Image (tube, rainbow, N blue to C red; front, side, top):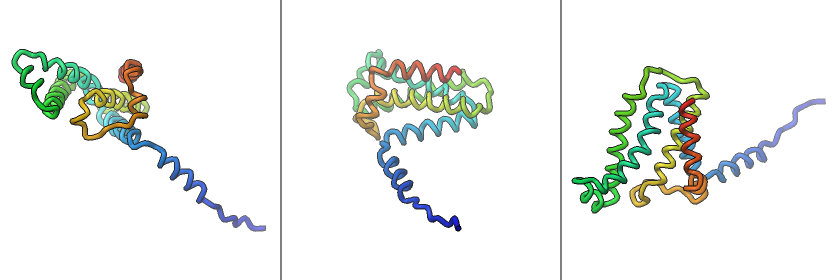
Length: 168
């Protein structure tokens, strides 16, 4: 007897194709950001990921406070959403540079599990802050199912978990 049985892989390929077709592009973008940040933490240590995770919420808070500032408030509040987003980006970059200099303690790499946790945590913070920005200036609009996962009801728990993951 011979064991030359031809295996039919069409059902396996159909399962893989249907599974990949049902995954939202929002989750692919989230996973790509988490993977990129995890590889950065794996290669260069936790300083950049940590600095970005701390800089984003502070920049959002400060960009909302700029509207009531003494000299810039009138200009920023009467300007277009693109300028308001530019203020947020400028604050984020400035805070990132300052915080990177503060939290960089010379670690050159991270263990893979910790790097994956740091990348995922930073992607969570990035997503939550991204969802807080004005919709008119965003290059991508997340779907309702994705927004429901990171909605206001769960935002606190996501952020607390992300910052605990960064602390590990």
